Length: 290
Image (cartoon, rainbow, N blue to C red):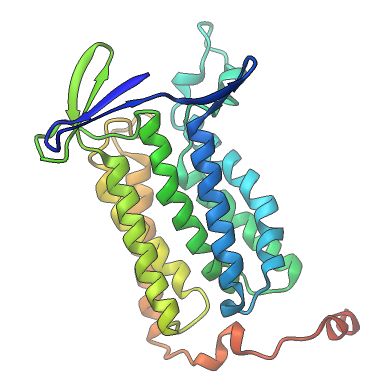
């Protein structure tokens, strides 16, 4: 049980990582929250899929592979840049600790990288443009990230350095009371704003080319994560350097996405070139062409 306060707001909450137990098996809130975010993200993407020229089945097929692959990628990314936490006394790797993800230890950029690679493979296999599929899936990513950060709150992790701001969060670590930045909240709210902006563009029909929303997501998330990562005290570092891995990846990805957006918009893309507006071959035509 963790006691977390927000002294500037007069709030106190008691957090139990375990939601319920079935015999000796414990179900953690972290996993439940991740599952809820996953379900809502998939549901939203399936409902909006036709606006990108893809079918709900395409989303489901991609998710079946990208979800477990993304979790593996997120875990590997975290372990690679935090190896000391997963070593035994003799220096060997503790495999049991490596697979114990119920207490946290997932790095979102590892999940995104793995998910993108898997989505590209699925798009290639199903003969649909990867960028059209990616545009439809970024909403699910944002929903998952909005929800997932509250799993970090339950675990009392992903917080920042000391602050005296009115919304500061009071926690106890190793018997010491700290008042810190609730960076989990910053990132959840940043992603919520990003989701609202992209949904507004989708509602208004503003989409110049396939991949536009994907690049906007990369730029938006990278910009926010870069600054928020600088506030955190649990950052993963680039091996023995003092460079925060996720901060470096965030700012670089943001810069690349912005450059690609500008270059693509300068070509004056036409709405009729969007995959959703193109005539696509029927299943019979696909078969005859093979």
